Image (cartoon, rainbow, N blue to C red; front, side, top):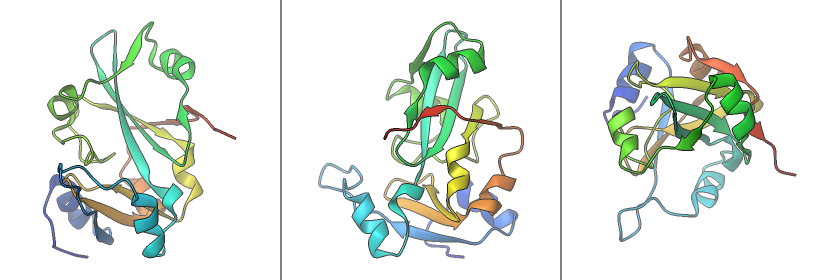
Length: 166
């Protein structure tokens, strides 16, 4: 375990004795994560498809929902609306993400979230032995064992929420 960064995510992982590696993601001059994340992960021996993206939505009921998804799939809006019993659903606005999750866009993890955020876990996360998640700190990601991560998803709804692109 590394103490290179501290966030609610690393604190949770340390409390649960979950081993993780910190991956530094160089930021561009405008303070955004580099676009060649896949190359960076490949150079570290990690599968670039094993990144668990945290996609934040907001329903008509105003509840925020985070979809944790790995690989190249895109959210299946119809499946999500039906599962959430929402007539309308939209992506959270850029400034709503930190308000809802406590994290900035580009660093949102699928765990260590406020209880007000409902979490959906796409089955695609199970396709990888090791996954990479947001660390809660911009410019850093965390690599950890998938099974260890799954134990931290207590209460999350698991299903097939994405359209897999061919």
